[in-house]
Amino acid sequence: GGGGAESVWLVEDWLPADVEQQILALLRGPHCGDFVQLRGKRTARFGGDPGPPFAQEPLAPWLQQLCLAVGSSLDAGALRLGAESEDGVQSAGGVLAGVSEASPCRTPNHVLVNQYRPGEGIMPHTDGPAYDRWAAILSLGCAAVFDFWRDHAHTTSGSPPVRSLLLPPRSLLVFTGKAYSAHLHGISARRVDELEEGRVGNWSRVADRLRRQGRPYPEWAERQLEVPPEQLFASGEGQGDEGQPGAAAVAVPSLGLNRADRFSL
Image (cartoon, rainbow, N blue to C red):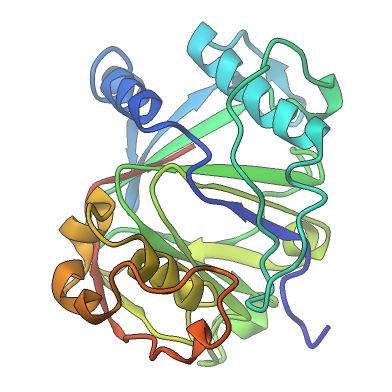
């Protein structure tokens, strides 16, 4: 309601860290020549020309396995049955096991890989009728803020997005319904994202998770947060857990997130 982006799921730590490094090595090595420079990003297309009509081509084996893993997650209900959290994003545990079978209608058969350097982004857009009624985005390399906009008029109104989400590396974002068919999505072209409670919908949850986790902090947090996490969360290390009453009363810091080289699939 209220023009928000419905049917949005964010699965943190969906992809194992070692698999992320393997995929990044493939994209920066054997598949480096598949990228073309576009305005604000480099893009590689796998699976054929989306058309219309769709001229399908076979995916590389590693991409086939990745697509099967997404389809398996959907079939298993991990991305359909998560309870909606206070930030309006439904979350679930990550899976990359049992990927030998998945429903064909839920298994992606086309992959666009975008590479964004600091200061680059993609204008608000919809993915159009060439694709099915849902999209999945896997983030690799660094964290960034991802925005949803109500419509084209909203993008030029000067009003903030209807929803902004921090996408950590190895997270899987899935959206369908009006979030896919009616709302626009994009990544602002900037070098620093401002993380602020109420502005970035899941920042409060991510910050609380970092505070509870303590050392060692995720590599992206050590590298990208303007204030080192050891300093930012020093007073809260190892205190509380997800279900502990009063944990939400801890102040959520507002700070910048420095962009780094990022791939999205």
